[in-house]
Length: 129
Image (cartoon, rainbow, N blue to C red; front, top):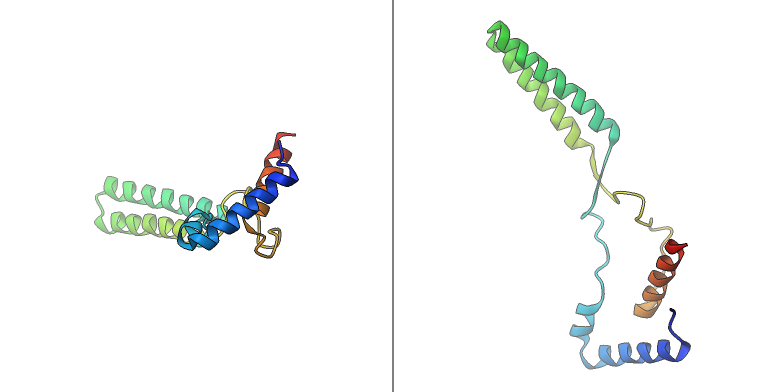
């Protein structure tokens, strides 16, 4: 149930009053903006190719052990770790999943606490439909 205009104004006044009286406490109540480096996304191409190379490396390692050739076993370990390295190169900073909004979709400007709450409420309301 959305807030009435009177309730919205009262909350805005309370927010402003809190910010005037105790700015440090008001800052602690504000949500932190999402950090771009805190989330990672993974390249599917790097994952698939890296896993294939790692499996080939494991096969070469097992073959080297079966043939009792140390150099083939060492080569298998090197290929296997190369595959895992390639997988790790596929991680890039950015949103993971489709629920994150891009910077272009986010509204610009400060807006304040109440506008963020209204946007979240509207998103929840739209998701229920």
